[in-house]
View 1 (tube, rainbow, N blue to C red):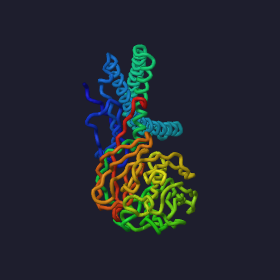
View 2 (view 1 turned 45 degrees about the horizontal axis):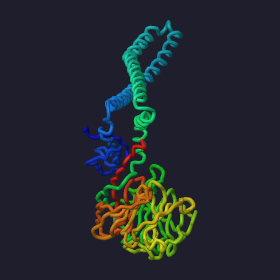
View 3 (view 1 turned 120 degrees about the vertical axis):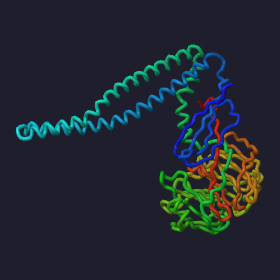
Length: 453
């Protein structure tokens, strides 16, 4: 039995921890994970065991097919490197030839006066152009490489045709899709690297120590590239001032900020900034407000029907944390509890423009027993407490409407968590821990099912 095949894809992304499987399942798997020495995030793809395709000689043909695709990729890289280098030579040649044209024109006009001087200059220019001659030879070599590339493509087509005849239309389509879409899937992995099942949480990174025991802080996951503003809200009630720091660096090193006054005080620490607006629960109500920072006005407000409020169904730490708004890769969510669901957690997907409920899921987990919670890729993760020893121990997937008990260590460094939210752009957990603003990196695991390939 041959070992699973690993493919690596890198991109400039925030730092993450790497977790690799001990026994990969017999399916395509992606481990979105770690940071290399140059700060690049590494996406690991584990192909299925070779034994899955060892029915006959088709295994060998598939392996040869993959090698041919790899050879073509290398050929493309060589061509690209040479093209970029030769382009510089060609641009230089163009400048030199234009200079020669001017020199010849001068020779024609002043051939009697300066013919000797111009001749020497022209000869010097020709000497400068002489090194460009090998470029032509390299282009000839590149032409052979292109021809080889075309032959490999033709051979690949021939192999696919043979496999089609041997395996039938259905199997051929499946194989063709796997080969032709692999690169596309890996690119999608780069873009959706955060999505997957939570498998680990890093040690905390303390960004700042400020404010009271309770509060919230965040960045906008939909902010334009380069916009790293930090939003800061101290306390869990009877406050309506939001601080805006120009960047994470400013937040860490200075107290320079702009203050925004909300039209109503907020309740709890479940606020979220999303696409330029802040969403918060109005104090002592089940009203959700969307406040646009660009216009300094309320753009939408709506009651969250049946949601408990005013410490009816708070998290275990209290603090009017009845309604918790959060964002993941799928959009805006509200986590709360209702009498109809016996005080157990309800998860609702919200339309960020209208604040209407798109769909709701009822869970069997009591809201008051939860320390904190956060959403990642449509799954709600719940901690078993907020002080002392803490872990993530319950997960409810809205994708499958199922739950499971898990055991993921979570270091509660300052012994009192009053806010814990996931940012899909940073792929990190933001926490307010007893007057400390803290970040946690996460490790996620995603299985690509065969039907996805």
